[in-house]
Length: 428
Ligand SMILES: [Mn+2]
Image (cartoon, rainbow, N blue to C red; front, side):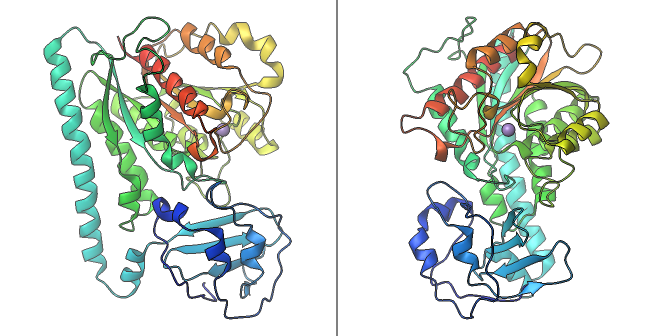
């Protein structure tokens, strides 16, 4: 239920437009009603480090509560044609959605059927470009011959399922730029040549924002991500190496890999967080819940989580419930030998590697949304990856947030090197 509205004298579109809006503009919005609530939430920032808007500033001016939601919440319609905010009054957090004008058109009695047909055309066109690029590149590789498996980059620039900042939506082009930036050579540490198209190809990005811009909701959007992954896997010898995006994308990606291969995989998951909440702030697709969805779906036989140092009681309970092998940083020195000689994927369809950049200590990778001290060194991660025995069928590198990176793009280089070394692990 939306109980109040505020006219905004400028338009805010989907995620891609947000940085154009300054906090000054937002705070100068003329507000129609006197505040009935003053929230005691600590000021949080919305959307990006380039747009600091303390929630308190926005919410001193809002309108009415809704008593029948427990815990009590405040619903605000800023009538941006795009934004609805839902805030916990007890200060536990905020949740917000961007509702595009397409949905308002729909509400204004544009035929649902017409909307659905239009959305399907956009989705088909998006998948067609990925399919045709994958087909072409795979045909060339097969013509060259001698390639058993080849890493194929697929960007999934999705950031709206993050519970904090949405910057990972901007990561894929920054990672590509760093892979090819020329400050380093094209060899991986163990001698694979990234310049060799037999080692690394690229089919571009799933146009996430363009699809959301058409009013497509997450249930369907996640299916589009899965379909894109399957489209790459359709073309032997391509194997998807996915550039996130926030960590929510691992669910549709792993689901696609498992469904396409016809059985579960073993997952090596490097992360500061277990991302295994049943739902986070009411969002089953949250980046903090992706591994709950993966385990529920039976897409993984073993799930090894390494680098964990921010875990709640629910995270541990969910870990037990799903039989997850959680390796916490506080015992890393004891676990190191085991983790540096892993053998995975035997008896299942292979190994999937999911690398959240925040598995690294922020000293190595400051450009992440959730800075969590006490993490792995870059060499720790490489030792684990280089020594891993198993057939790596797919992987992802997620949660790099360019909006939090250093000015010289240090974390972009870190994410790029993770991609380079994973490429070497996949291609053969
Ligand atoms: Mn994480």
